[in-house]
Amino acid sequence: MMLQPAHAFAEKPEARVHEINQPLEVTIILQRVYLDGEMSEERVNETIWSMEDFWAKYEKWQIVDMEADKAVFRQDVDDISPLLKANGYFGVSDDGVLTIFNGRPDGSNIIQSFFQIDLGKLESIKRDQLKKGIPIKNKKCYEEVLETFKPYTIQDIKQEPG
Image (cartoon, helix red, strand yellow):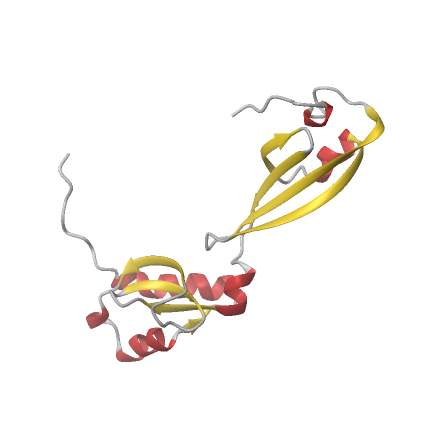
């Protein structure tokens, strides 16, 4: 998708490098997308004197929207979200789906669902861990729990025609 410049602000430095006579006041929205699907947004008001400096500052971000006085940048973060680190727990939903909860598993406050688990094949200790909730403190724990329970996935044997 090609964004059309609505203003001198929207011109990339490759197009034209120039200093601005008067500063531009713009709102920058920084969206961070985490491995668990959560997205955080940070709003920053910036005074831009040099477009070259501005674009250099955000070179590691992907631009997703731009208007005369606003730019939205997005960045994928190779980590779990602060929400998960603070209060995320793996558990199992009432219908046997491996799920992340905001707080200990209780059927509500679901953040993300993954796959249905054959609880009958699980060792009782693993089943008990899921019922109590497994805290997610970091990316490594997040990935290890997913890998641990993947072999217990119930395969849907129904085939869609076509």
